[in-house]
Amino acid sequence: MSASLAASAGALRADSISKAFGGLKVFHDVSFTLPPAGLLGVIGPNGAGKTTMINIMSGRLPLSSGQVLLGDTRIDGRPVYANADQGLVRSFQQTATFAGSSVEDNLIAALRFAKRDRSVLERLAPLLDRFGLIECWGRHAEVLPYGLQKMLGLTMALATQPKMLLLDEPAAGLEKSERANIDAYVGFAQREFGCGILLVEHDMDLIRRLCPQVIVLDGGRLIAAGPPGEVLSRKDVIDAYLGGADEEDADAQHS
Amino acid sequence: MSNQASIRRLPQARRPALLGGYEWATLGLVGFAFAVPVLTRNPQILSQTNLILIAATAALGVYIMLRMDLMSFAVPAFMAIGGYTVAVLSLKLGVTDVILLGVAAFVMPALCAVPLGWLILRLKGVYFVLVTFVLTEIVQLLLFEATPLTGGSNGLVGMPAVTLFGIELMDNSQVLLTTAGLAFAGFTITALFTRYFRYEFTAIEKNDVLAESLGLACWRYKALAFSVAAGVSGLAGFALVNMLLTAHPTSFAPMSSVSYITYTIVGGKGAILGTLAGAALLVTATDLFALKGELSPGLFGLLIIVVTLVARGGVIGLAAKAAGRLRRASPAAPARVAPIAAVPARGVKS
Image (cartoon, rainbow over all chains, first blue to last red; front, side):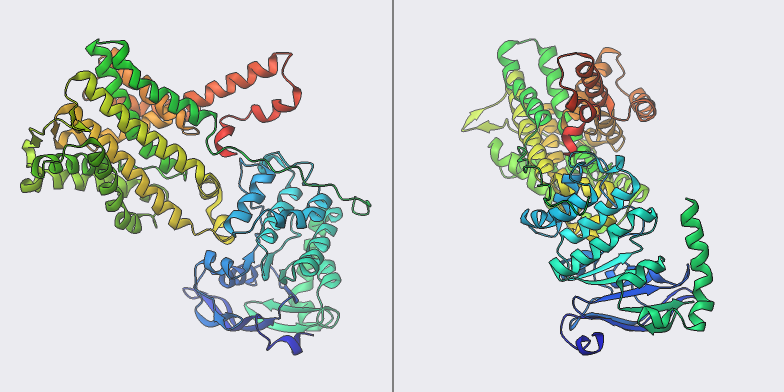
């Protein structure tokens, strides 16, 4: 699927991007393409440069070399809000909401900043209902349980009606039972809004369930790309990563 | 949950009024100042009301910037620009119409704030605070040095009385009317401005990184707010020059910025009423305890420390908390409002 759509307009393309903080190379010469309405998983051990990559693609950090393109437009190094206007919106690994404002006001703020009207909320109603956010409509965001805060942040990103969503570990910190919400969210975003999604995640089951294609980062290099079944059985990927993933799962079960 | 046949509908959209209860109460109180000269001729009360209104209007510049969690020491700088603009216009060009002068006192500082804001709003936290303080020092220096325009250490004196539709506003009570008009304009502009952009300002205050990622160009709103805060400060500068009948550098001393910050924080930075309450309380207290002069900045500093440690919402925050407690204690109160009413100064954020 990605091969045929790769060249079409509106794709998000990283073109041999590199990033170094002083002498520290965070990643080096990474290229990939996320087709419009496509879904690409990004995995890699802690410190592989995944969050830095999202920071760069959204415009928060400048590149050291290479370029990021959305359609034909070069977007790296532009202000974050300008990229959001173009339909490139990211979510955050930690909870990200406006404390002191109600769930409703948080969503209204997202609509306002993206210049959308309230009809978008009506379209999001099934999702809001599923997450249990409608019951909390008038409550302040910071008093919600962690999982709900996380889903609120994700829903706010979706309320801007992005063309491309960059999701930074959406399942991190969620209980196993809550992770199905991420499946529902990703499915809904693709089906109802036609979003392309870059999914950075540590949860291997989630990646296997959702992503037709994944790329693997390790030590700042792209070491593998392909369907998850194939990639995750490769010896170098297992060596680089899956040991870490097992620990991660064990940690998640203890918490 | 997911396989329910019917999806729960969204609650009906609230259409909150532009101005909330705090704004109306504040505008009512400021508007009441117009009646003071009618009710009394007591010069002590007239001058006290005058001082309170000028202090409160000046402190609005602090209030506006605190909406975005930016602490500004620049108020005296923009007051000076407003005040000297008026003095120069009336002395050199013979403009006395109070409305024209008021517009000039707002527009001139607001325009000056645009390039300054562009320079300093990329700074955050303590760096912003520091640079606004330095800015006030620089303006102070310029007032002393640019003698041909500002009169240097002599200041500018001998301005003709301001006029409204050709009528001179000269005596004590008429000076208070001018101040009340300028204060009312300042409070109205601030109330409308902070409420109209409340989502933007709250977002920038709480999480500017998230706001940007949703598409908000934060710097534009910061620059706009800096400019409007400068304009409102300029109105206060006009009122001060008009009351003292002189424009002098010492009226805009850098240390006076501490007082304006104290009014806003002690009164309660969560609502515009706090700025008025803080100014009224502290100006009265300063007068009662004869704290004029060198002592008050130190005591105000101490007061800020106490308030930030003990009651972060200030006087208004404490009052809102007490009101919420009373409402919950009274059996007539419907239970559903209790958990929301318990949060101080909610009216501003929603």
